[in-house]
Length: 187
Image (tube, rainbow, N blue to C red):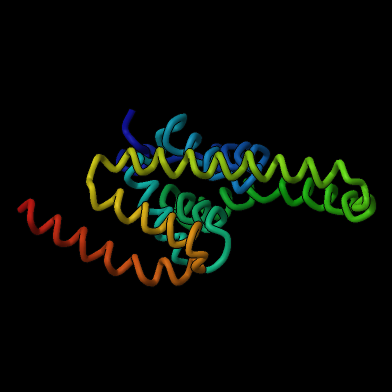
């Protein structure tokens, strides 16, 4: 099936809303994994390359990556109305559930088991984010430059404890230059 962004088919606003609603209901730890599954694997609205490009763009923008990605995908598929449908679908249930659970947590914050539950959920969410990153990297082919930049970013954040902004500010221009060099070399 061809991605909808490349065909004459238009994605229905209801499909965007309910698809992103499903992502929002499943989005423990940010929802990047579920968003990728919906948009690329299940609905074929975008391919892996388009998804990776939008994700890269959204990581450079301020604010939560997933919200920006939701807006960009909705906008790419249906313009402003698609962006609004996708974002409202993504946010409505997490907002309601988060508000309810946050209120309960504040009321019962002294119960130790809640801290253990949150620690386990955090570890699972980190694993999902790492798995999605590896999957996106694998979708880019086996270009050694991609692996080098991914390893540098990982090491800079994990071991050197650099802020994400500094890692992006340092590696983004180098990555752009490496991609331009590789593109020029293949011509």
